Image (cartoon, rainbow, N blue to C red; front, top):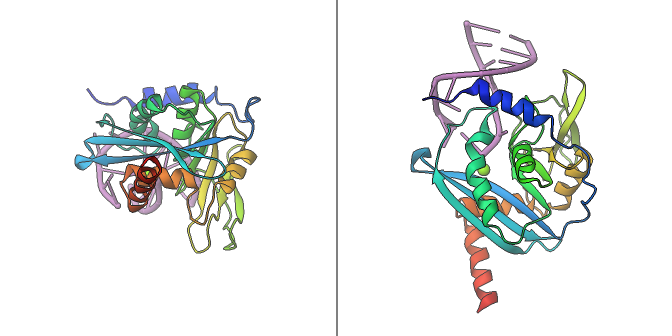
Length: 231
DNA sequence: GCGACAG
DNA sequence: ATCTTGTCGC
Ligand SMILES: [Mg+2]
């Protein structure tokens, strides 16, 4: 039996109504900020989700969890979250030091139905989330100046709505697409991503999650560091 | 109809 | 990066 996209579309529309686009009343300056990324193995057959928890503002790795499960959905633009959510939800379950804010690799409400992966995770796990995407999925914007931290609004021209920001997070790099996921304003989403930048294109939580999910040199370095700390 | 299209 | 699938702008 195949995937019913019409059904998933309707689910997104229903869920999107419940997204909160203002700052959570209980949301103050976070002590812990999380980051997520997902990778694939066995030619796409295995989904590998990684969640990292960093201290803020020191950006020390506090905890990370990795979950591998069989992949249940192909990648379909606009439906990414159904592919990645199950593994990410399990990884979240395993996290013991729950962060107050989660930076998710992908769009928040900058999505055709205002329900990207960051919104999906935020709503179903009931946490403030920010979508940090490397490329545009939806929305219009003017060219972003090359000067670091330059940014442009990301707009939905259908209803003249602000759905995110395009941020030049680092000189000579392509900009990032930042949008509210859940329980946070566009302004704060942009602000927190900027506050998590540390000399790289990606904000630290996302960069660390990328490293863990793909077993990159940075992750090996972090492992060695924590081994030293416990030795 | 054709190209774009989060990861 | 890919793609059967959908959806959008042109
Ligand atoms: Mg990724």
